[in-house]
Image (cartoon, rainbow, N blue to C red):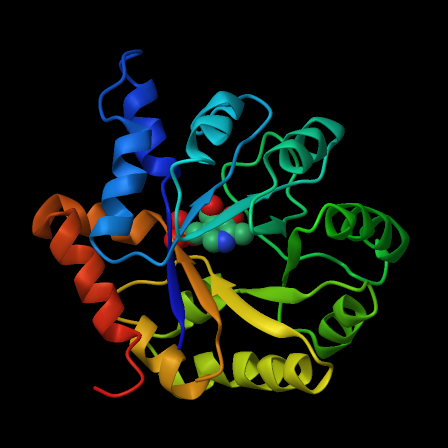
Length: 240
Ligand code: PXP
């Protein structure tokens, strides 16, 4: 089974545009779960431009599925995550001012740093996942950090999918096999949507989790949040 974790950062972006509490991020998280989401993802950034650190603390007791906090492991991020103790932390290498994550870790160059921070999260009982591209050397490098999972950075797949789906998925299947052979569980995320999700699931059926934000929230403007979550879940079914 591949779980759907809904990234609710965009909900916080909308709320922050007006300064009040509409839409209510906490309520949306609970509703996503009621509508079928199997996890909630948040990505607090140091400038708190979407999800705030206080949101993360408020969400922890409300999320009854899987709570996933992603971000760059700065001191303040590590303090927050080890205090909140989500089920999973996903580490991304992007600098604080980045618009969105745009690459995976160089797991060879940052080996020592990753070993340290991963060890710290695991000592607190938090499962770790690290964001990686498809370079097999870097996927093997991820396994050597001691992480439980990797999350494949799927932007290149999403970009290349419309022109040539088979060519687009090829490096991802290869990386997924390297990860599996190295004993790593596998997540995926970035730019996944209703067009490209099913094909990825069919080609990599052992995917544990996808984390989807931008396209899902945009689709919800047309179909409504409940319908949209059901549509994404249908793409992830083992049998169609
Ligand atoms: N995974 C990671 C590590 C991300 O940084 C993001 C974007 O915040 C996502 C998944 C979700 O990407 P998208 O919003 O394009 O669905």
